[in-house]
Length: 194
Image (cartoon, rainbow, N blue to C red):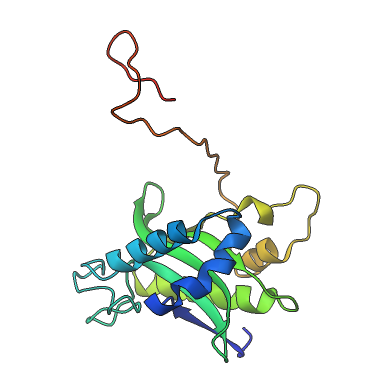
């Protein structure tokens, strides 16, 4: 791990600072959508989300009164000057095969010269979180951009493999149109999405 990077929970005042990182994996994401997502995650981290029932969030800073990290949140990697080079969001969930699992999404690292340094720092923070929260496994959903089909060498998946992660599943997504009360009805009382 590169000592010039440190992993720390995202603070409320840093939500806007993290927005350009998130845009790298979600181009076109509106700033208001990011703010709402981040605020909701940080708010949920402050309301009884620690596994032992403490406040779990420490005011959104990642540690509860019991010293345990929040069971949901956003972890960042920053340099010594406080500039963010990456982040991931996480939540502890019960999984069928592994039981208590740290589920990680929105993993992103941006650095012009050293992708591996901040990525390794985030991966080690991820494992530390999982261990402190009593998780038996870590499930990470990587953005498709990290899984290039035409190249075997990619720094982000390589960092995961180096840290002992393996590909276990392939995740598919189908976007659905939101069904609401204004959607026209079909015979039989079902609703049709528009």
